[in-house]
Image 1 (cartoon, one colour):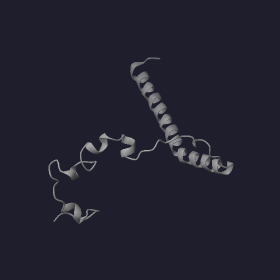
Image 2 (cartoon, one colour; image 1 turned 60 degrees about the vertical axis):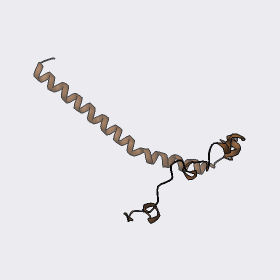
Image 3 (spheres, rainbow, N blue to C red; image 1 turned 180 degrees about the horizontal axis):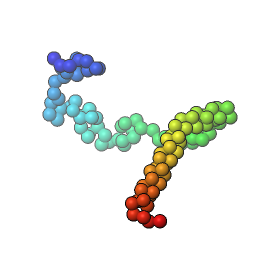
Image 4 (cartoon, helix red, strand yellow; image 1 turned 30 degrees about the vertical axis):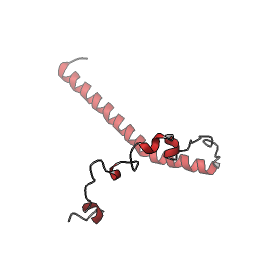
Length: 107
């Protein structure tokens, strides 16, 4: 049995535990012997990646302008929040200094 809502599937709840040190419990399907005679790149079919194509694609000016406007639009809310928080902080500091001046007669 088991809980089958929210994406849980029946085969997950009915799985049997793996055998201790069994063949299926090892990630490479056996032991380390499979890889001993070859390099890791050959065994896992890894290829060297080259970064020659970076910064070669040219985008049209209209697309760049559209992206720039979208970035400004997304950051506008952060800028407004920053300015409002700075104004509130300066106002709170000013009120605190005036309160201390009134109580302690600094000036």
